[in-house]
Image (cartoon, rainbow, N blue to C red; front, side, top):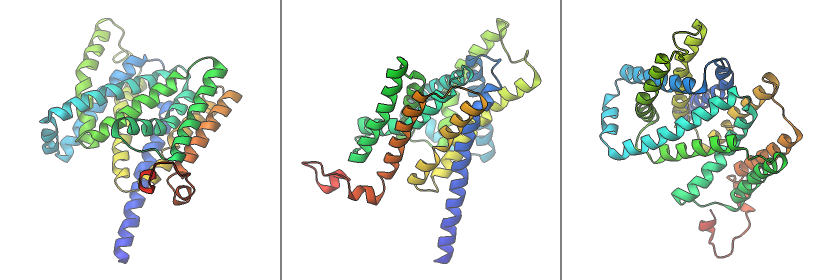
Length: 313
């Protein structure tokens, strides 16, 4: 029994390390993309996809997982699902890189704070998941934060909403796909690679390619963009298998928190009173959403007429 408990604690410690490492790396990525500001966003995206494909392919060769790959690519459903998820993660990566280099890191941070709540809505719409009273209240509170910023600035925070929606949809597609994270990422980047290679060749022919003309540090950053793209996804997969989902929920806010700190303290992006009110509403929503899973909040959940206790849960 003691050995089992010790093994469980060890597994959880490993899971926390992997998950925390993934979200910490995602949190510091704005610094990486800002270092490539001299390269156009489409070219950064193209290299990110291409080198991620190369990195994951080498990883699969080392681990000799061709059996999993063959089994996955033999399914038409997997190809369709991975093609759709490749599209959404590609859009997400492009918007994120562009937003960082266009000095909109505060808004990207908002997007990843909102993302868990977008995932909840997608689960309701497509997976027929039920929404509890406090969870519904948290979604409405977050929406009020978005509407407040829209009203005060007269401009819809499309970067934040686009990032949250694309990544939430990507997560939904990966949830229903019959492939693991490494295999899925290999298939997604394999699907996108012919497109980005064609684009990079055209840029080279036109004399607009950064690769081959930029400095050595820029070349290295472009090549290793595949590593910093694939590694946190793999770490995240390893981590979430070992720790409860509620723990993942707490840790995931490390990434947007780091992004916000970097945006304000390092990039000197403005963080106005409007931002403070809007973020406060969103943070309040996230706190309420997190607490809604606790037994204490479930006990004080208002009764909904016409629903049984099981339906409310």
